Image (tube, rainbow, N blue to C red):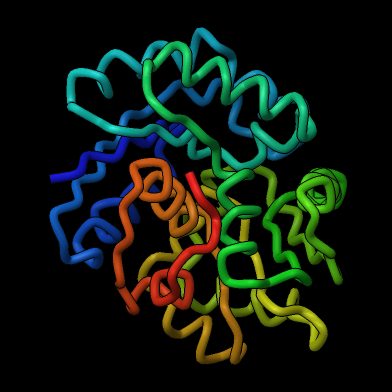
Length: 243
């Protein structure tokens, strides 16, 4: 049994994690611990306050007691708004506090794109344009080429959490670019786990979503490889990124 730790802010789309655990169909347990979201807003300032060391540390002890082998901070915006160096420092602090390998969803997107050889990516974000632009800058800092960014401008995570498959498909279609190797949907407030086969069928290319890459990153840190085609192309290829 491999236990994976996920720190998740608030309550918007956390039910994707038990679904992913079920779809993995293996001896994988996803331990989800909620952290305080503070202000629920998609602007650049609110996410910076969501992932303070104090808020992250509050959930770490529960993960240690669960036997988790790795932890991923499942909040895309709160990582990338700090830039590449700031996000690295955040992850280093989380690893020290948890006493285990750690990462965050923004780094998970970069590593997952590298693993499927997606050098050129398109972004479909629920965030306002300025926040979506910060995610694109983060991806570029990680060595990826961003062919385009489409933002929907939702105001809160709670709003994004109400979206169904039709809205997620529409976002992915609007973001897709013929020159992109993959489409990235970065919001951890979106329900996407059940829609991955439909998304990839619709676009004819890999689609990377926040919860999907978060769990994949935790598996990578725990040195586990799981073949789970229902979770998209990312889970049907041998990762090239090493721990």
